[in-house]
Amino acid sequence: MASADTDTDTETIEEQVGTWVDENWDPDLTLGEWWQRLADSGYAHPSLPAEAGGRGYSQSEAMRVMRVLADRRVVGPPPGLGAMLAAPTIAEHGSPEQIERYVPQILNGRQAWCQLFSEPNAGSDLAGLQTRAVRDGDEWRITGQKVWTSQGHYADMGMLLARTDADLPKHQGISYFALPMDQPGVEVRPLKEMTGRTFFSEVFMEDAVAAGEAMIGGPGDGWRVGNTTLAHERSSIGAGSAGFILAAPGTKADNFDRRVGDIVAAASRRRVGGHAPGVGMKLYERWTELAHQLGRTDDPVLRQEIIELYTLLRVNRLNLQRARDPRQRTGGEANMAKLFDAELHRRFRDVSLRIVQADGMLAGASMSGDPQIAELALHASAPSIYGGSDEIQRNILGERTLGLPKEPGPSRDTPFAELPRNG
Ligand SMILES: Cc1cc2nc3c(=O)[nH]c(=O)nc-3n(C[C@H](O)[C@H](O)[C@H](O)COP(=O)(O)OP(=O)(O)OC[C@H]3O[C@@H](n4cnc5c(N)ncnc54)[C@H](O)[C@@H]3O)c2cc1C
Image 1 (cartoon, rainbow, N blue to C red):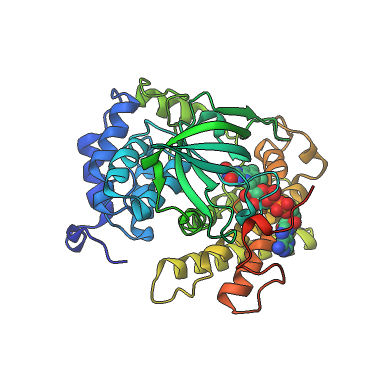
Image 2: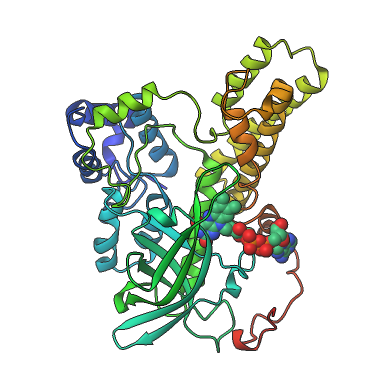
């Protein structure tokens, strides 16, 4: 996509953003003030169109902006599913009023969002979801259960898929809503992972209310709108992160009055550790260095695994480059990036455990001095599930990119109410 910002012809993005940071960064600002400046400048989410608060940049241009913010050691724009999924989806499918109502609150970090898609009986078969939305005067009444809701206990708003017409075939009777999470009809129950943290929740809805104008797209457009969200999820997961300093958005995290200089200082003091590290070249360099330090580089199997890892990282980078170039894109790049990400997590886990050997069983205080090895080992199975499992990515590539026959199953024209169901 061509950049909408013609200034880039005369001045590089790096120079523009650098100048902007010089003029706007002040460690004495509160986080709320800093995020508002970023949002007003269009740099909070530069790949959004200008009318949705962005700059119309391509993905690679937007990534260059994020790298400057990371290199300059300023606090990055509000992260999370609002920026990653809700903002681009609403920018594409929402009315001008909906864009105005929801997107600015995401870009300035005032509202955090979660994704209310998966259900106990509808994960891979997402179109089989059973949560219902029934029209009640000017409102919609929502009843059902969601699960695996990342950051659900921190969210102010949810991107909700619900069935509005069970007499239509399953893909056609679904609609997409912006659901306020703080209301009597919504109960969020946090779940604890094997990493010891709470990342996701179950969400129970009983007559929860969504306003009539909270439907994104029209009735029955949910599958199409939801696929936009999923496409952003898959390409973002595979693309990795710019590595900037983060602070959690939303009213529940309530970080708005913190001084940004203190957030940067705290990030610099923090030991490496805590969350699973990003699986990219930096981690590769860190762990090959560790292999040298621990004298493991004579192990021929380890050497082979390390070079395979390096090859995979390079091939992934080429896939991402192709994904960003409309002239080369074939359509399956986001699914491939998602598959690469899952495979890289597994390989990084295996290589690092081979480097530290039995020491990898020690979480936190390992002798190798890198607590992220145990962290990654516990986290590595998640990426092959979230955002659609590896098998589902391969099915999509087979059917949509390679044109192979679809999986056998009930006709896509059968009304949802007539489909066979478990229990
Ligand atoms: C860490 C994490 C965070 C998540 N966050 C969110 C979130 O914020 N919001 C949200 O809505 N969801 C979220 N999810 C849910 C995720 O999208 C689902 O777990 C995923 O889609 C798989 O669904 P499922 O768990 O119901 O497994 P199932 O669909 O029951 O699948 C079970 C197994 O069967 C395989 N399988 C199923 N169907 C097929 C098929 N047709 N062909 C071949 N194999 C098949 C799958 O690959 C899998 O191995 C998250 C998941 C994880 C792990």
